[in-house]
Length: 266
Ligand SMILES: NC(=O)C1=CN([C@@H]2O[C@H](COP(=O)(O)OP(=O)(O)OC[C@H]3O[C@@H](n4cnc5c(N)ncnc54)[C@H](O)[C@@H]3O)[C@@H](O)[C@H]2O)C=CC1
Ligand SMILES: O=C(O)C1=N[C@H](C(=O)O)C[C@H](O)C1
Image (cartoon, rainbow, N blue to C red; front, side, top):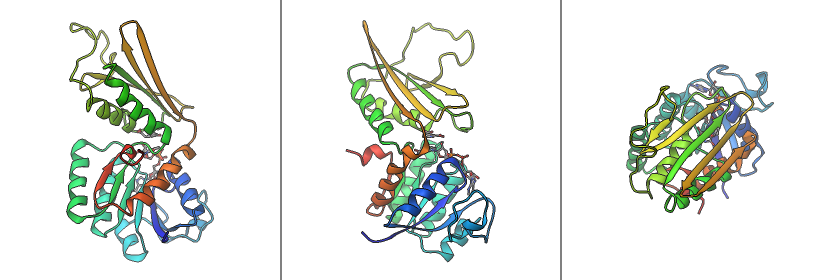
């Protein structure tokens, strides 16, 4: 396989740090730069807390793409920043692999349209962990038979977006197979606002935020006299890295945007 030149945005974040380790350890990947909010002009090895690598740091994505070779941009920042980074990547013919969550449906369809027009591959993956992808697929399978479902996602208390990207994607996948349905009693009233969680197409999503958690999701199905619970836990961020690697390899052969690794993991 040809060497894949990679730039990582958000290299000091929880996910970015793991991605730097994974990319720099892979023989067929070369980390050519990182894009950080600070430390423009430094090398990673000169910055405390960064890996001791001879890799340049840029604060500006355009300058980065003008100065280093890049096939794939891995973005692990925030939705506003991630969208801007994707648009810049498309301008420079670079394929984005985006783990950042919190994009709206409009963002995704706008970015898909640009990728299609420019024939540049892109992947937005709300969850890179293989177990979480299987949880989404199993949930879709179960919802055909047990259409009453509630999603409970639990994350660390530094998370900015709620509900999680994974919970939204799970609800979207379930919606593809179940008849539109409003759950619970038709006359139910929330005595305390938010008690029934967020609503997605009649389904309820509950978001828990606590220190000590990483990323966890339960999908609970209810039927007459029975219940089915599907659960996935990420206990650390290394759990996401095989999916990031797979996305970087796969995006090289794409000419459209793929939303969700469920499209790739068959
Ligand atoms: N798809 C997946 O499997 C996963 C996705 N995530 C998502 O990834 C994103 C990042 O998560 P964490 O690493 O936990 O967050 P974090 O807050 O630890 O890291 C985000 C990093 O982005 C950096 N950043 C912000 N603006 C920037 C800019 N303009 N240029 C360069 N860097 C910038 C921040 O300085 C920070 O270091 C979130 O949206 C989260 O939901 C997190 C875990 C797994
Ligand atoms: O912020 C996180 O940590 C995570 N975010 C993603 C999401 O919003 O689904 C993926 C995973 O749950 C971890």
